[in-house]
Image 1 (tube, rainbow, N blue to C red):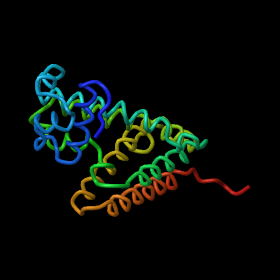
Image 2: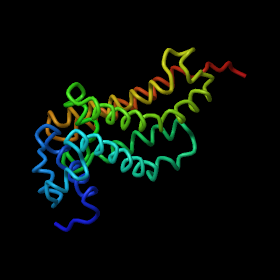
Image 3: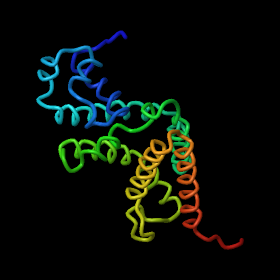
Image 4: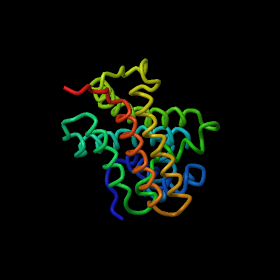
Length: 211
């Protein structure tokens, strides 16, 4: 396999590949070095510990996925609620390939290390929460169009809480896909998410008196 980039970039790429496939605990420093094609000395030159590598991998994952989603076609939809549905459809469309190819690095790691490695847990939280935050403006705009307060004062749910809920569903869908050995259940979960949001906003539609 041809490897490009600096030693640090190679190690981060190796971490993303192996942790998604094997988990953080099962991935050893030796595994990472072999996959990256670097020496153990090079690993510890760039990362003080495996924990430091885990946190850096979550941050690197955030940057990669931020760029990927920033260029996604759902942004071209003019209507904010339509954009949210297009985002959900996009998430369904990219459930392709092997499990390790479409599941989330941050979600995979945080399930394992949230108690043992709080530094990694914090980096994973930032990754998931920051992505959710990109959805909140569209949800808030859709709420405003329907006379709802985005802070949840009139609904009991806010733009931010619904944005995080989308990620809860997606992360749960990844877990079910791993448990069942394929993406079908994840696709169904994403479809249920779309139905839930459609119902949520249908109920929230203001009543209109007849002319």
